[in-house]
Length: 466
Image 1 (cartoon, rainbow, N blue to C red):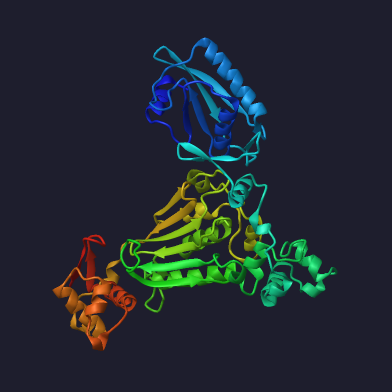
Image 2 (cartoon, rainbow, N blue to C red):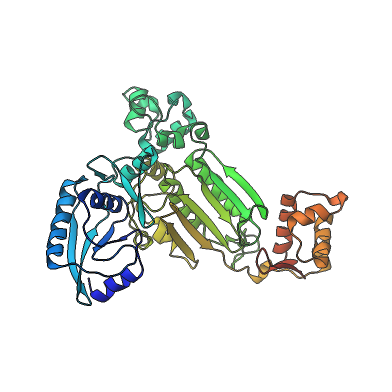
């Protein structure tokens, strides 16, 4: 490493991936640091820097030799499984520093000799005691796949036989009875059930009559907001989408289509038009979310529709150490291999890593955010600006097509442009009384007709009436 680069790193202070050490302390303390970094994304320890102030104090020749030797012994003898490190000496202003590089481990979880597991938490570290966190580390090393787990209190009796029959007909071109082995063994062989006769988690999510009976959190929470900010009040529609993964996919696509516009785009007047965002983008991103979510994180998939974008928020950041740049090139990691296998046989998903690159092939802005600290992955699809065909003049014809309540809303906004849907619900006449949610729906209609327009943000904006 060049001196100017190391100087820049030191000036930025300690982080999750950078630790300062004035000198080698003890093998146990250094082993704990190594364990935490190997269980995270890796990092470096810089010896010869005061950890409280970041002052470069340097090491003598004897200290360099001793520290290098101690680091090698610590990595070999005090960390389990053994990790491999690299060291280098960098000279800054006539002071010598020793940099120890620890790569992200491929055999997580790593432990010290006492069996303690540490992970990084900001610039510090903490000891892991929760089973779910330990399982997550095993999952990152592909030694554990939660979709293969048997689900407590489930059995083959919970299977939707119609769904199972369709699966065998489509995949094997046979009925279950046509196989020469017992049904129980057949279900176990294709991993719908485990060795104890319980449904696997993948089996529940694809073939159970009521999957949410066993996994209530495995739903899609869909919300359509008014405007471009997520708020607790300003939304036009919300829905908890339940069922098997194929059922949730179909329902979510239908719901998304109901929230988006269709444009004529040169088609005949009898055509229903094309969706403002190509369906293939939405299909690829939604399927990826259902397949690759982190089943160890107790959170639902969130499907959010705003005026200017769609967000699909997936529990769990990218698995296997993948980066956004890598998935854009088609690299993939099978976090849930059974689910991926069932999806490839029952849905348009193919599991070849091409879904994300395909979403980039259209003239639509798609942005990906891999939030490692929050353990979630977000796909943002930016909606195109409404074509002129969506904007209508404030004419007598448009007014007569409105409900009495919608016309009253227009008059109220003319008088008080800062009114919220909640305030309108409180002030509207008894004859046209409605909940804030109904008012939001009415205001959405008025926006789509081009009769009202939001200017400014949620807190400081106003409504402009044409």
